[in-house]
Length: 254
Image (tube, rainbow, N blue to C red; front, side, top):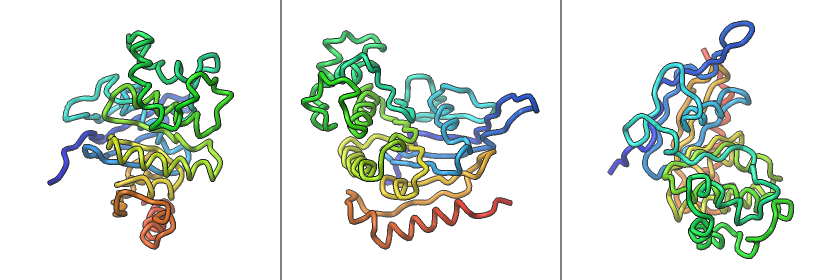
């Protein structure tokens, strides 16, 4: 049975004023993420991927087009949004960083800690509750930032290059971890990434954007079985999917 659409992006256009006139960034982007689907967006640097996420999160209004969540116009607060940097506050301990979003939403600190507590082990953070950000590894900081994002209880997660600042080995470990955690919770995810292998390994569907002004150049269903495993990263099926995405990224637009 086909799953209902959790997110629909319909002909979204976005531009910005400059001294030379309007700079068109998004030129009619269409995208669909089904309930519980992991969707990635890749494209050339500067093409507007982060802008697209901000429009979906209702942090920016499109010039034209619409964004629907569960079939109705998207509203602020429906999505949990994780930007590129972990944005952990250096003066707050880990436990107080991961509860920050709940506290801002009005929950008392004790209640927020009670809600976060059972998830610390799942996110590999148990035992580090009182650590400050500078005492954490890069991977732990990213897991803390993701926990702060998902504990808000939104069924739609928007992730903007969450692993981009990590070294190669840590990034691979985090990809494996993220795939396993997603397998358990089955959030609907829209991930922006520059990493083709990451997109293939994590995703059900990948959208390829053109250079700015961005529109959808291609949509691929990855087709790898779930749950995902480390050997799948170098399997012939994954290599073929990566080759298709790479070819699409370098295909002339005309």
